[in-house]
Each structure stands twice: as structure tokens, then as C-alpha cells.
Image (tube, rainbow, N blue to C red; front, side):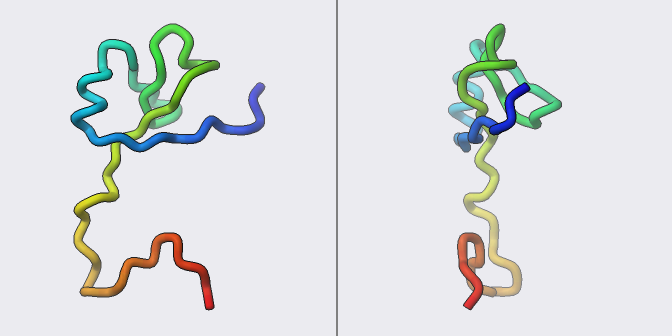
Length: 68
């Protein structure tokens, strides 16, 4: 069994739609994987949902910020 997870790559939903014939959705991973070999090899794609989201109450973006 794999101990290191494959990194998730985030793509726009339009790209996911174009790649749909060669990728399938895996509920276990909550991501798209290559058909036939995706269980063990290849990229793991997720829909980019982080862009365009309004900031809460006008607060600054905190993702990736380190504590002071």
C-alpha cells in the first residue's frame, strides 16, 4: 500500500470536462483519476474551487500565511 499520497492538481472545471473521456471520478479520493490505471498511477485532479470566492467580511486572505 502506498504511504505517500499523490499530490492533487487543481484544474478549472472546463479542463476537467475536456479530460472527462480519459479520467473518471473516484468517490474514495473525491477527485478524478486516469481510467484503468488511476488506482495506482497517474495524476489526481480536483476541480479548482478556490478562485473567485469572496473574502469573508472584507478580511484579508489568510491561506498560506504563517503565524507571526
